[in-house]
Length: 512
Image 1 (cartoon, helix red, strand yellow):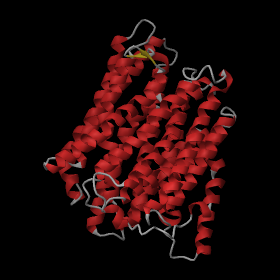
Image 2 (cartoon, rainbow, N blue to C red; image 1 turned 120 degrees about the vertical axis):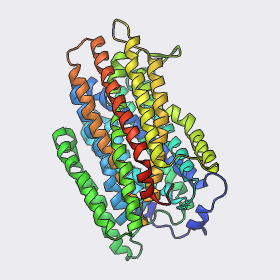
Image 3 (tube, rainbow, N blue to C red; image 1 turned 60 degrees about the vertical axis):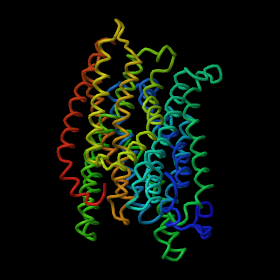
Image 4 (spheres, rainbow, N blue to C red; image 1 turned 45 degrees about the vertical axis):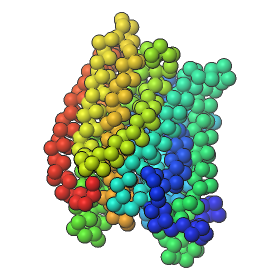
């Protein structure tokens, strides 16, 4: 471990200032992190897109339980990004944290590929902890490539977000399509389809880790150990304790994920604990820095509601796709669940760079919306997409099947909402947080996603429960009506955000 990802003494003259004073739109290091994140997201979204369908079709869970289980699993994934960020800030540094997380994700994927039915929760537990160490720290390193006042930061995060979605597009479609027998069916025996689908995740995670280890020298001093002032022997003690502790806790995670009531207890504790820790750290910062942190909390809180709606994609929308959608888009035969998992990512890839250029163009003309207004617009686009999901009910046939074309258009609209919130939110977290808490704040950003996933599972479970024992047509109507309610709530949230934007802008001070 240490020899593979140890401190790099030879930086080839690369200093942080050299990296941050790059010419053009993007630093070259962004591309290395782009590809490492792309393959990691293939792994993550490939497995995410299979969870509910696997639990219903292979583990024989009912739809309500599967939604709750999905919410619990994903909540833990994102909750551990806060813990991973904390350990990166205090002990491992961003690079070692990322590398360790990647190894755990590889192990989890291999376990699931070997026997997904028997070792489902065991493999998922490795993935949960691994993602916690990997995800927040690569995003933080992207922020480190820019100076605090560099207006190109939002465009950089938009491009990085395209890498996230390129992985999500490929993994989100391929894994579930192979598992359902709609892809590579002549090559993969039916009884091994799920094994192979999970196996793809392991292969691409290895590629992700190799990409990072072979390009990390270009990062100079970014992401090295925060304990470099200690003797190597003392530093190793802290690092080894972190590695061992993350393995020891796996049985605990298995139990908590398998029994969703334990997830409730965990979510009741982790959020308040994170806030208390942040307030404790705020004692050491200036009034100006604390105002920025309060602004960051506004974004974090509202993002919970955004992800609770958006993440129906892996829960109730997954079941909606399996039961209620035709299998053609513009006359092309496609796996409906594959489309549900990957359409949004395809649109992000197509429009992320364009949206980034729009922000740059508006900035030059001094009428770029501030971050709060962008968040408000995100909710309005989200509402538009869910209203389209609702409207699919009017195109249903007698069997309860409706238009995959219209459903895909709904994701097209939501994509613009995501592009107004997610990459902008990651960028805002790095700009609003003091140097010493950047990984923790990024972890809290993903912790908000954990709560979003948790509430997404509860919302999906309520919709599934309301449609229990219904015909397929009746089920479609129940799901569609649920999406209409979510659209109304999203409109309200968007209006509130735009209304409070002057107040939050004052808290942000010089941050745009």
